[in-house]
Amino acid sequence: MPSGPNGTRCRVCGCTYEHACAGGCGWAANEKDLCTTCETAIAAVAVWYEDAVKSSRTALKREVEKIAPAWCVTGRSRRKARKARKVK
Ligand SMILES: [Zn+2]
Ligand SMILES: [Zn+2]
Image 1 (cartoon, rainbow, N blue to C red):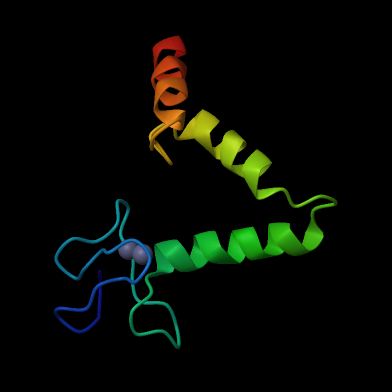
Image 2: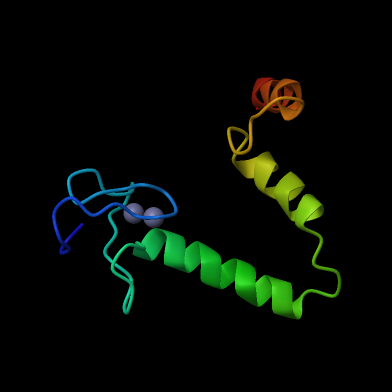
C-alpha cells in the first residue's frame, strides 16, 4: 500500500499497509479503512446490480467460482470447488 495509517486494516479483505493486496492497493478516496482492490470490486458489483436484467447473486457467485474456485469454499460447495480445480 503506498499510503495509509499503520495498523489500519481493510474492512472487507483485511489487507494492511504491510500486507497489501496482490498487485498493490491503496486506501479508497474518502474511506480510511477500505482498500482500492475492494472498492473496485464493490463498484463493479454495484454497476452489475443496477444494470443486469436479473441480478441473481447465486448465479453471479457460480460464475465467479469458475475463475476463482477457492472463493466461497465452505460446507456444501467444497466438493464442487475441488472438482472444478481438477478439471483445470
Ligand atoms: Zn480490501
Ligand atoms: Zn487491499
